[in-house]
Length: 133
Image (tube, rainbow, N blue to C red; front, side):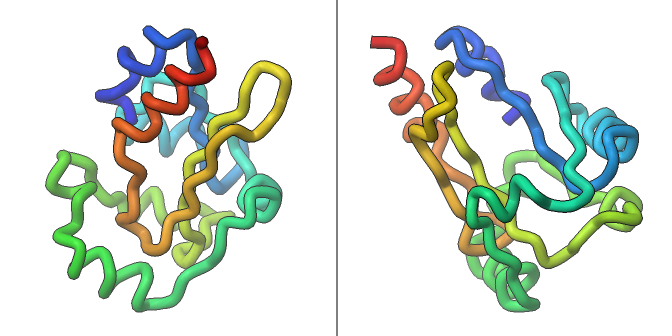
């Protein structure tokens, strides 16, 4: 998402990463990952539950990403074992991406089916474009 940040910001949108862990743990994790936009900690995983983001099993965390060609690694993202060992970290929690408009209305939600299931940037930018009209 960091590489796409300029395209997101050009659409008058703000990216925010929500990471497992306390605010300090999330900040350290995001800094190590090179995230330059705000990073919020969610040690109780309340946001994950609110958006209905499921937990996976070994299939969703290891096998399916390998079958998918591990898109994140191909795009230059890395996995940090140390970062994954934060006290509040749940290795089996699957990620997602939500777009919430200025009124607080959910306009887009991608619930990842496996750990490497990332939404297409074109889809995300299309939703942002439609909100700016």
